[in-house]
Amino acid sequence: MTLHLAIPRRMLQKRFKMAAACVLFLLMCTVLYHGFPSSAEERLERGANELVEEIRKMEHKIKTLEQGKKTYPEVKFLTYKDRKRILITGGAGFVGSHLVDSLMMQGHEVTVVDNFFTGRKRNVEHWVGHENFEMLHHDIVNPLYIEVDQIYHLASPASPPNYMYNPIKTLKTNTLGTINMLGLAKRVRARLLLASTSEVYGDPELHPQNEDYWGHVNPIGPRACYDEGKRVAETMCYAYEKQENVEVRVARIFNTFGPRMHMNDGRVVSNFILQALQNESITVYGEGEQTRSFQYVSDLVDGLMLLMNSNFSQPVNLGNPEEHTIMEFAEIILSMVGGGSKIVKKTAMEDDPQRRKPDISRAMKYLGWKPMVPLKLGLNKTIAYFHNELRRSRHSERNFHMPQVFQV
Ligand SMILES: NC(=O)c1ccc[n+]([C@@H]2O[C@H](COP(=O)([O-])OP(=O)(O)OC[C@H]3O[C@@H](n4cnc5c(N)ncnc54)[C@H](O)[C@@H]3O)[C@@H](O)[C@H]2O)c1
Image 1: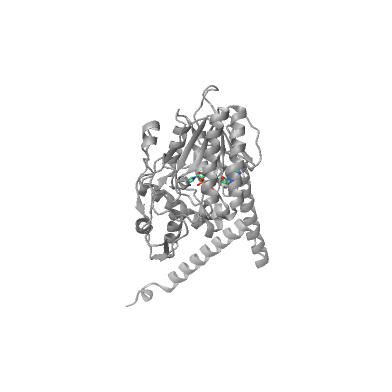
Image 2: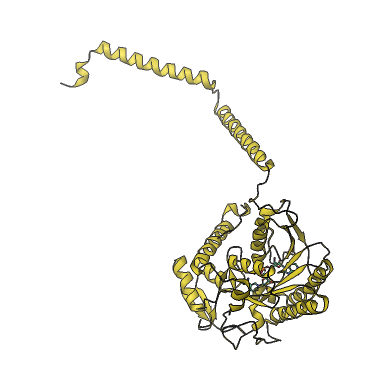
């Protein structure tokens, strides 16, 4: 016997009525709560009004957040006696911006001067508005009159595509610009540190390169505007030291990498990381047997500050003596990034130095400095930075920037 036949008809009717009453009651409650939806148009209008109200609330929240006080990383407090006024030319660039971070964190007053040829405001944006920080849009080819105690002179395009883009301007920046900064140092009795380069050794015949080596530079080759520009900048420093008693420091910087380096500067590390991240062929020029040694940017910044505050005025190599062939770099980066890129060999570049490795005995002896950051740790941070930059450039959030201080 089936169940429904077991329930009497009157009972079924009663249950049906009760269910209908419940549905009617719920319907009335809904109507009372929301009002009578007289038409679809009205319902749509109500929905739109609710949305507008939500947007208004969110706009209010954003406005309140924007009006909020900007927060800065906590900097050390230095008394007037210990606090220095420090000028960094090229301070919005890759190395300069990391130097800004370190000097700001130490509690000094920092002024950045940059013409933003290769530098970016966002590299130092996190300090804008801080009472110890100032940024001047200025080209150092023109004189500058400010009061400072120390000058880190970094302004100069640094990668081949950038310095070859306008060779005459590169020469002017390194010659006229350096004269202007030395003139300023003389006038205000400031100490000046020149960011020179391992390129002053050209394609070296001595290996590894120590500071007594005079170099092997082609004075009319495509790299000459930079190599000879830096060589004459060094000459100017020692002429000002001898003739005008200006205190100078000269750092011969070897290849450096890290976050905030230029994505498209055509240098080995950035090229290989970008190509691997985008699953493109990794291009090695020549056989890949030429060697390079790369230091992580925080090691360089430590070395620059030690040199500036030392009593040693002769040129000092700052670089990582751990030497790898270009082919090895390609393989290391490929294995760290993963993906399906292939290593492809292309025609060797003109005047490309075959071997590059610093002798850092001088830095170790006089500054107690040597690189501390292992290659893979530095590469990891740089790969993460590039990965983020690529994601940003493809994403709708590309115009949204979260300022960041990098620390190892
Ligand atoms: N990064 C390296 O591997 C490396 C190696 C050797 C030497 N260096 C030296 O270190 C310094 C910094 O290099 P980087 O890698 O940070 O390069 P970068 O291009 O990121 O920084 C250079 C900065 O100088 C600015 N600049 C250029 N010309 C200027 C001018 N006429 N007036 C004002 N500002 C100007 C640029 O806008 C940029 O902000 C350079 O002098 C470079 O020669 C760097």
